View 1 (cartoon, helix red, strand yellow):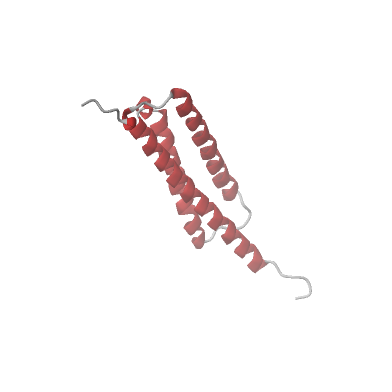
View 2 (cartoon, rainbow, N blue to C red):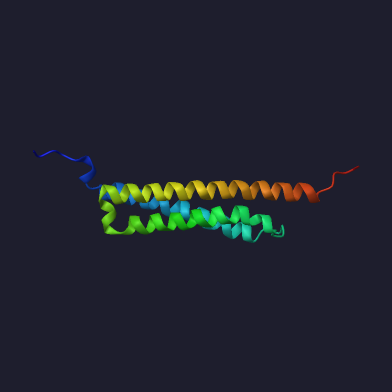
Length: 118
């Protein structure tokens, strides 16, 4: 019996190219944040590793997803979906790390700033 399996249908190249663009732009923003944060005048502390590790792991996942998407085999739906899952996990990891970095900076600044009249 000849059944049609939707998982075997290839991804349209135009759709894949749009995904590659989105992944590339968000990866650039992630790398830009790390660059900007590294130049932050607030001194780094040991506890900053709690933010750096998920950010770097997320960036590595985003790079892996971009690498998979740039390969011609990503026209196969299974490979394309795997790359999307890797990218989304990387994006979530990076977002969690960025949020944690912002919180750590807020707490650091709050602990060093004195209020007038205090």
